[in-house]
Amino acid sequence: MTSRTSGRRMSLNPLPRLFAGHYAEGVVEETVLETSSVRRIRIVSPTVKTLAYRPGQHVRIQINDPLSLYGLLRPGETLRSYTICNFSREEGAFELRIHLYPGEGIGLRWATSVSAGDPVVFWGPQGDFVTRPGPYHLFLGEESATLAFQPMIETLDDAAPVYALLESDHETDAIPIDGVSHLQRAFRCGASAVASQAMLDALSAMELPDRPGRAYIAGEARTCQLVRRHLINQRGWPRTAIKIKPFWAVGRRGLH
Ligand SMILES: Cc1cc2nc3c(=O)[nH]c(=O)nc-3n(C[C@H](O)[C@H](O)[C@H](O)COP(=O)(O)OP(=O)(O)OC[C@H]3O[C@@H](n4cnc5c(N)ncnc54)[C@H](O)[C@@H]3O)c2cc1C
Image (tube, rainbow, N blue to C red; front, side):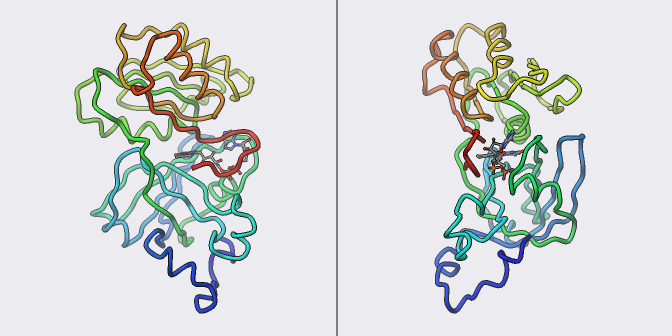
């Protein structure tokens, strides 16, 4: 956490008081490099015991204070969204699993450098990218999406089959996932994750039941749009059966 997060002048700036119910303070308890490109970060906070949460929701990690002068001048350099995993009200803890993508961003830098004992401020839980009952569930996305899908899949309480098409660069860096009855992988093999042809090719070849289920699409924004268009135009799915959540886009910072 940078010095911009702390040291607010509470008496001069009324914003922290106005937004006080929207964020909470915690401490990083543990970080684990799960694979060469996934870091799991466990955060403890007494406030967790009081929070409402639905699997699939995310927190916004405060890298720089959005209510400070710095944050007001550079709102795109303040908060970063990560899906909550292993939320435990009893333990007052939750975890984040973060894809260490090859690139540059304040979220990536935080995820790479944060360590046990560091203070953290988080906003949320928030968001409505959550599952709904249906005849079957279909999860579609790249690495960051795969990390978000796991808590959604773990807590599905209907017996409906779970299909997933998960993209990664190579087979060797495919992110493990549990609870999927029909799992397919797509590999970019060095190609861009933007408007991913590998994803579209694999989706075109994917065998699905002949009636629509419930689809959850996340990850790179243009690929998300193309995948949704495929389900609607090629497979005849109604828009209402599809939930879409663009996680990142080239030239955009800190989507939420
Ligand atoms: C609701 C929600 C939930 C999310 N949950 C997770 C999660 O659980 N785990 C997780 O790892 N990510 C998750 N993300 C994605 C994460 O918030 C973004 O990757 C975010 O942009 C990272 O911030 P940054 O500062 O590193 O990059 P930014 O400053 O936001 O982006 C800078 C540039 O980096 C590139 N970029 C950003 N993210 C990626 C990426 N993932 N892969 C490739 N290139 C990228 C883009 O070109 C972008 O323009 C989630 C996003 C949303 C909206």
